Length: 488
Image (cartoon, rainbow, N blue to C red; front, top):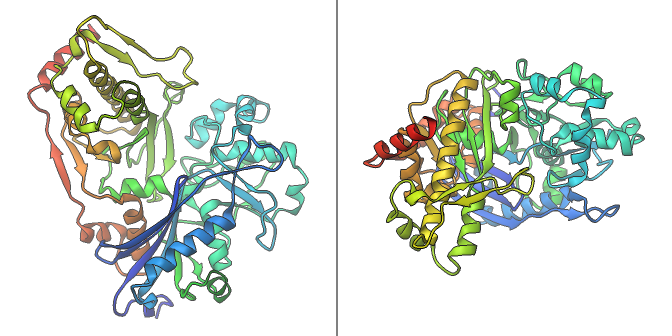
């Protein structure tokens, strides 16, 4: 009998630890996909003692917060009904540890500015073009490779003591189980893996003076990492000794799977940033694709890849709200915008509002009689046009043709914007009714990992992901005419 099978008697819960940059959460999911309870605690980086401008994560504090949250949600259930634990986090961050698992240096956060300069001169080690092509990951200053190069240049003595590099999800799993592993979906964010093999690239590692031995055994989503040790249970005051801990990893991959998206079905996660991603067998990226912000990560299914693009989105909407609609609700904003016709009477926006954008954004076409509603609607139109162009690029990269778009995230609640997307894309937009797609996706793999289901796909079918469908409406033809004029 499998050592996991004795956990499958009676009620069945998965405890998902979700470590986000803003909040850490513990969420209890049952075997049918019902959210039983959840608790959260604020999360934030700390300034480094060596430079107050540097950002680090306190892993011990995060683990204690997760344990505190877990105790709250376990108070009303039988802890023996928790049959699996899984951990999902933001990507790229991690740390060097010694043979006993102790951190040799704090976890450098993806928010830390120290790695930007490293990225700009990475060509001293390996060309950025080769890095992109091998890994599939675009040049983002927070990528793991730049953190490791920074450590190599500034704290080289640490590598003489280092046993392993552990990503943050694996640091937390190590604290629980005493087992060192590497979540494949986390490795896929590092810019050090080979997009085609899914393993660490010896060419990239050699260029920066590393070997694959620095990284513990690779585990796929749903693989067993180990079980909660009695020591960890006692230290954290958790009644979970012996409960298996199963791999998940990078939150994006599990949000996409938890959204119900099938292969070759694009998913837009709409928030402050919009992330457009697809689960595809192909990820053929050119230099032009990387220049346009494209990237490709390793899917939760080892046979698939996740090409995608991202851009600032609701961050612009929030700026317009604070600037033009002070004190007003989004309902008021949407009502005013709905009264403005497509094309906004000539008002248009270039949505390049990031400080790093070389030229910057702009608002044009303003005349007397134009209102704040024109500006708001023009912003939604501009972001929807950007989505359209990015989806066209993603179709080329992933080798598919969209039949519909799955929409998740806070931006999905805006019905005016959702309808505009459907009209401009001229495609159905499927608004996921799942509010916790990341932890649901992770729990599907955990349940399959303990044998409760034959596969994550079977778990997803049982969970019953549902959508509200927004079809292209009467304004779609108008937008297609406007698009044709723009392209003429």
